[in-house]
Length: 159
Image 1 (cartoon, helix red, strand yellow):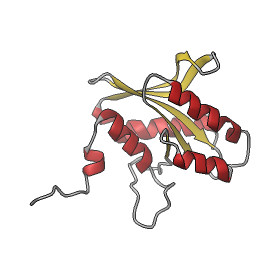
Image 2 (cartoon, helix red, strand yellow):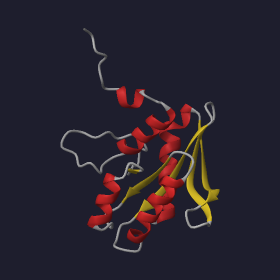
Image 3 (cartoon, one colour):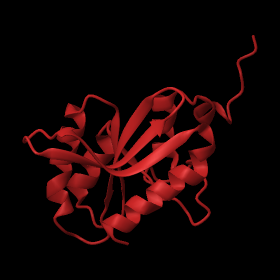
Image 4 (cartoon, helix red, strand yellow):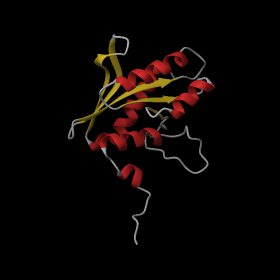
């Protein structure tokens, strides 16, 4: 899978799983300047029309060792400098151990690899932390206040 194919997969997933919640997804949106003074281009701009809230989504897929490792620290720092919520969505087996650890620990990153059915996939006990779509789903819940996503399988406390 190429980076562009991964970006389109994530956009397709967002549309299939959450399009009925009133989001619009735009590809390759110019948004201000980066931390090195260049024009910033966001892979996906997810806009919740009703609230006016938005999420910038950078997509990083790496299936074999390569230069993406060198770009991740910069991408995280640039994402943190934006004046809006943003997340790096990642998948693939080609990240170095150090960069994978950095992504797993970064508050601005979320693993996501949807299946062919493009439905949310939660984490089950015993699953690796990097599985399914649940990390990106939780970012969406926190950004757009869709608390039913994280509360769907929880019971309300009854004293």
